[in-house]
Image 1 (cartoon, helix red, strand yellow):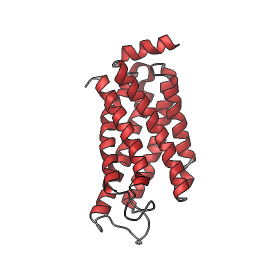
Image 2 (cartoon, helix red, strand yellow):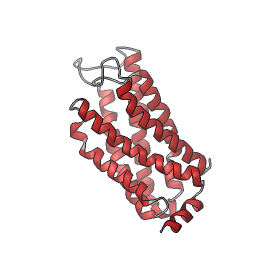
Image 3 (cartoon, rainbow, N blue to C red):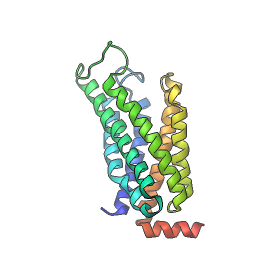
Length: 210
């Protein structure tokens, strides 16, 4: 698969992920914002996650020589985090809403362990992977350094907003806004690859800017 096509899928997937974060408020689930998301919202998450999984490796391919094994580790951690949050967690929520009782809720209240564990682990992997990808991207000088900074800052903010995740609507707005910033950084990288097409063009453009 060409880097240009992967960049396009990365761009579309990241935009879809931002849409997913917005739909949480526009189309809430049957229990409101405190419960599982609606089926349409989670379907958007799953589709976006699939696109991101295909497009994300382009972040490594285009700067593999510059970011090395450390950069590969960062991309893989992002990849696994997306699987847990956008695919696994969203699938659990779809089943929870579409087939009541299919997902066990020990105690009867609060999110089920099958959703809570991937949500926490996925966010941790996204933070660690994003920090690595952000730093290595800044140092590689293949993409605009601002792309790396956006990803890096977004991941640090995701970590800092962990405590406000369960503080009601204001906390959810803050958490989703920070997550949207991370996906915006990925969308920017995808757009760069989509319009310039290959590693040589991206690298030459970076040299001209510098």
